[in-house]
Length: 172
Image (cartoon, rainbow, N blue to C red; front, side, top):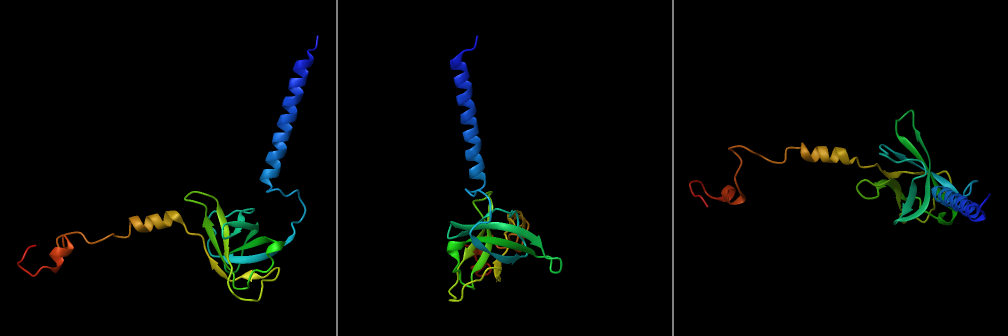
């Protein structure tokens, strides 16, 4: 009563589905199988982190060198303290490295961008990056631009640059 071809097809389909789930699981963890990554942590203090989330990438020149490990709020200053997990092969970051929060494209994900300085002294594990740039709030920028009063209007405003520089009584 059983058809071996149908059983084989169902088994192959299940194996394909499990393999797909395994690939998705590895891709969602950035290829890490668990355990502590080989690297070190740095801290950075920001006044505004925008939409930055844990596990967001940390990049230098567009190349991922780590990820955001944790985000906490400083109860005294009300700043965001971001803990960065940097890969061990990038252990010689200068102590005057700057950090900023940027966005991939207009509506893309947020990430932390590092700009290495020129100090020969490297950052040590657990050090804080003091040169930081907060996230830019796009809605605030648009609101400022739209409602900032883009110029004079009314009868006292000149119609053009030529009218403003012409002597009285002479029309260009």
